[in-house]
Amino acid sequence: MNYFYSVRSQVIILLLLFPLLVNAQKHGRKNNKVAKQDTTGYAAKADSLLLLGMDYASRAISLQEDSLFDVALNYYHEALDYDSTVCDTWNNIGTVYSQRKEDRMALYYFERAVRVKPHYVAGWYNIAVSYYSLEIPDSVFYYSRVCIGMDSTYVKAYQLIGLEYYKIGKKKQAIEWLNRSAQVDPKNVFTWSTLSQYDYEVGDTMGSVEATAHWAELEPNDFTKWDKLAMFYKVHHDQQKFDYYTRRAQEARKNRDLYYGH
Image (cartoon, rainbow, N blue to C red):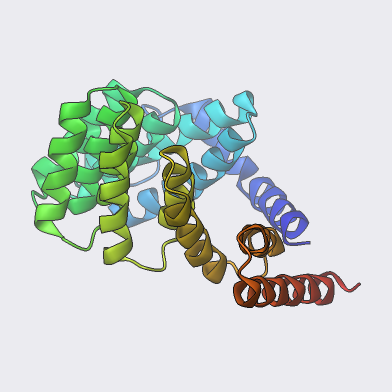
């Protein structure tokens, strides 16, 4: 139900923006006669187009993706022409190139963002992500730690270090950093879901079970995780925990049926 509402909303937004897209593509940046009143107007238009472009990218609709990203870049550059000291604008241009898988170009703009604002944590994190895509582990570790040095609660930096260790085959170190991530933010779904997988892969069954239990608590209406936990404790003859997780699975199913009107 939410999915169809979302698609409908996006179609409406796209229709509203269509004249803007056509005009921008027809005249281009050089022939744009619109007065440069302030960077906020340009950046806001670019933000909207970038969000639409990212949605199209996720659906692999390449023509719309390229068109929207081009127009987004046009407006971001207009914003830079007016004021090149706004780090978010540089960062957002980097995000466009990142979505296009042009990681070197993305890196250039993320670096410009932190040059404008040296303590811009999101920019440093995006630099680390670019190096992750470019498969340069040492730089991933270095710039992720820069983020943590600036903000010890920046959970995505811990996660990225964990993902990089996993990518290069060092699963125990990956788990160590994801556990640190869990300490920083105990309610992060991605951390627990990933720990559940990584612990299982290294043979730490109880670690995987405990991570799955944390994950289930954060998504209580997903009965599949409760079912898995119940079956685990049934096999291990723990009747009390089997009963508990079976009850949680039943509650999740009931909530699902109420939600869908069954």
